[in-house]
Length: 350
Image 1 (tube, helix red, strand yellow):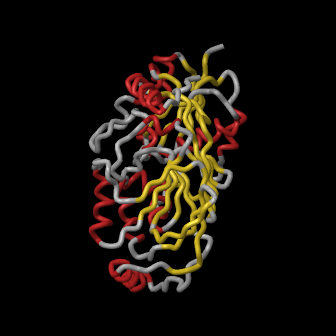
Image 2 (tube, rainbow, N blue to C red):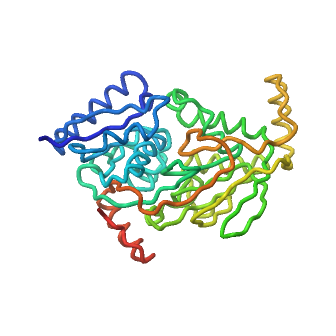
Image 3 (tube, one colour):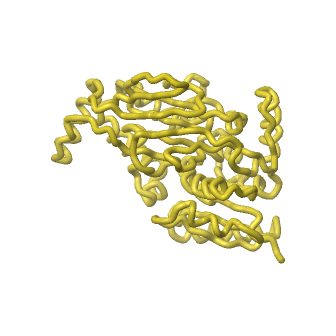
């Protein structure tokens, strides 16, 4: 019986004929290079990772996520929920492709072709067990977040992300400036503290696009990174936007980072202190839309995982160590071995 690969794809990751061309290319390359017959599974609205689980059985021995971080997270969540050892490869067809960049599939350069090494990572890569996060019972591969800055990842529609790329996020980020910061209560290690922030993210990667170099060892260290961002003035937003869109890396991101294994994030019904920039943005938004924002903060605000809405706060987030196998390029695999040895954590290939 021929080997079979399951390609999980986002139907709008590439528009129109370009999407069909890439799916055809994926099927051709998998057959020519690794002798796999391909079955396709579209991540249509309404489908969940649980719908994918019945397909994760022989003769399927390879899963390919063809899309952005949301599509990749969808496929990896199904593999984790099924407890499947099947390795997953990534064809980075999304806008940002954070996980692919941290795995070394996409080069750390703003002008890099995200697909240049995608097939070689699948045909000659090695499987590596990586951690996943879990938020309120839902797996995520890259990040879970909440707050106005997190909403900027959720608000753009799939078609907008496909057609306008980073500009879709830029528009949503501008809208987030009109929203005052939120007062969060964060509980970890048995202690709670309150913090004012416009965005709280719990990530499984070193680089969220905010100025930290990638470190593949972070993907299998049994920890997640708590990131708290609270920009106040125009310069703060410009710096964050420049780092996110321009790929600027200096190791000194403008936000708080703490390594954790589990955290509870709650919203207090108290308004944060809006900066003069946020007050101006709020007035402008009210004038343009004719809608007056609510005067009191709610406890249940939007929660996000891997760029898609996933319920509301409160958010209970924890790490799921070495939950899935992903295919890593040979050069990055060698780096992973060195970084893991330095942390006394083996790559743990399947």
